[in-house]
Each structure stands twice: as structure tokens, then as C-alpha cells.
Length: 134
Picture: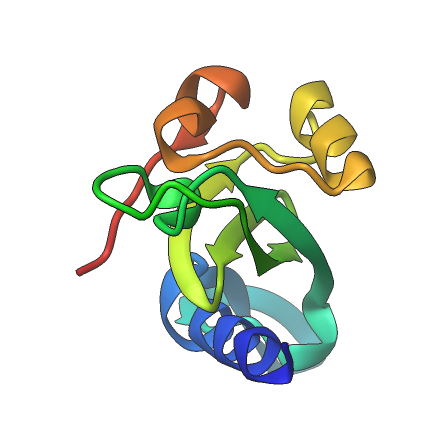
């Protein structure tokens, strides 16, 4: 379980979450003005991380495809930064949800510890952007 948690948090912060745009400021003669923007990765203290066991009807977890026909429990990790979330099943990236704080279905599923599988995520979470990384 700790491996799935650590791998998911690390992947979200360094790869899967979108970069954050920040203004660059300069001060000249006591006057502060914006001189552009910069992109950066999210800081660890900007992340909200939720982890819980979730049961799936096959060994393919929530990814679909070919898997053994037995109930399998795997750790689901959801990493939220600002208004975007990345969802991981068993330590593997499943999908990204943009606008997660505005999606009532996403918030309900997160509270219930029952996240949608990859195939249903886009339609269930409305503003979801399904991204699969290989």
C-alpha cells in the first residue's frame, strides 16, 4: 500500500499534474510591476492526497481489458492540486480530472471511496480530460 501511495504522489507532482503558471514581479524605483510569467511544478505542500482500498471485479482493476475474473482489492490514490486531480489504481496512472472541485460526482465518489473506472471517468466527471500515459 505504501508503495502505491508514494509512487502515485511522486508521479502526480513531477509528471501528471499540470504545471502552475505564476507571475514574475520586479521592483524598480519603488514600483512593483509584473514582468512575465513562469511555469513550475506543484510543491508538495500544495497537494491533497487521498488513499483508500477499492474493490474491482477483475484483476485488470479499473483499466478494463483482459484480466482474471476474480474480485481484486487495490489501493486507489487521488492527488488533488488546486482544481485538478490525478487518479491512480494500484500505483498506476488512470486518469486526470480537470475541474474536480466543481464536479459533484467526483466529490461524491471521493467521499464514498468509489472512483469510476477509466472508461466511465470522462462521462461521469463531466469536465474530465481522460489522459492515458504509456
